[in-house]
Length: 271
Length: 329
Image (cartoon, rainbow over all chains, first blue to last red; front, top):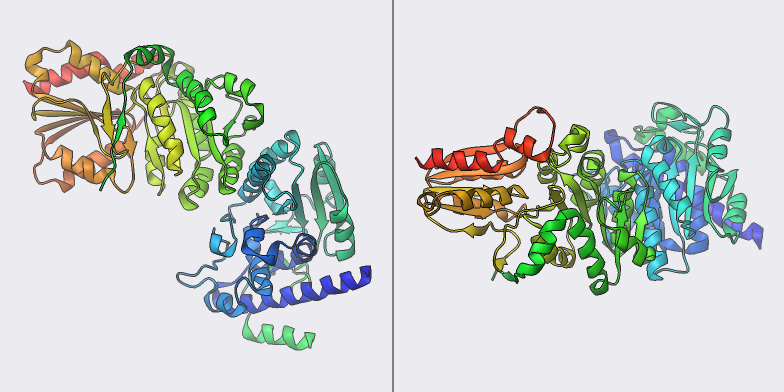
């Protein structure tokens, strides 16, 4: 059963990654943030498998992509879950008047509660949302799930919010730190010691802290399935650009133009 | 059809609240409003006592969230709270709220239009004796440069107490700017009507001079008029501008200033805030009244007590009296 689950998750990850490529290719010379979107797909797919947040616009509100530049992953999820068709996203991505810009914009019709991309803010918004859920007894069955970039953790507001989550024990919240090794122009500030000091720092907070391979569905399932009492913070070691040799661990694809030729090559190599 | 709301007047309560000042009134009022607004949550950044919220904290520990000295997180967390359907008000000292938290305010209140109320304590020059780190003369310009923010600057404590429930019911992004320190001069001496965007008349005399004011300096204008001879006061009118609705207030100011020969505008802030609405109004109106702007200059002046600083920028009672006499002579 478990291997079937994992097979399903792997298939869905591949599908979402292909959606990302298609949308990125449509961006043309406007370019798209490819690497950081591909690195967090496996977590999105695994968490969505457990809490089905993409099953409706209402449920999607409990998923916050604080690293908003990874919007391709969110848009791929919207398309795959049928909230909106892929063609509509591709046809308008980053175009004039589009709902699908290079960072997600608040759009309740699509289940996107927060405009993200100004790094750090999405995580604080998510903490406020989780707090309100707890107080109002809304959405009791599902945690508030937030993806934060490792580079994003440079921001002061991230640490202000960690303090708050820890201090108020916002236990209905899961924070996934996408440790893909890079930030915009350089290796991640936390990567030099393989995220050990970041882990140690976070370990001083009142969290259920985990250190996992963030591209391993099995490992993610195991961590996410653990019933715990505190906010769950996951340092997921991932590969930037995961899934395609062209992009993997190559920070030129943090934000890049995917030409038709490159796109076609990637597709041909898959099939 | 524009709805007007009648704000009742209770002289005894007004006296009491104006003695304790805006900040204490703020905390006291929120405490009372919690009974009416069950889901009201209060956020602070280690400023519960400064905001008069200690009793609230003790009485409603489950609805009171101190995020620590972390203004940016306070604003964004409270914004997340209201995005999920809750009602929240977040307060800390004005410079740390509006300057340090400007980006969070732009994102949450401006761009996303989340109905969060943020309150800047001790804005303007009230804390001048602590230096400019604790003053805030930039906030109205910032607030009005961010689309969708509704600005409320109480004129006195009783007004704040009376208006706060309406602000909460409005469910719109709002910045409340509390100026002044422990005592406030009463501005309202009777009931008044408001539509929450138009200037409100305090004294209606002739059309030789219109005095416009915002915040607690309105009390200084009142005091100055009280001390001036009737030969002056019968020739002038005094309106306050507590509410700035970015879509509606500009037109109302334009209409009003066009009726007067001279205008004196008083605001404890830099140019770019409400003063810019008044100057724009002059561009738009056919008659061209003469305008005197009593605002903070574009430099950091010598610091000291609130009254000392206000007098340096022509917002003291004596300054206002002298100006009125000069303009009407």
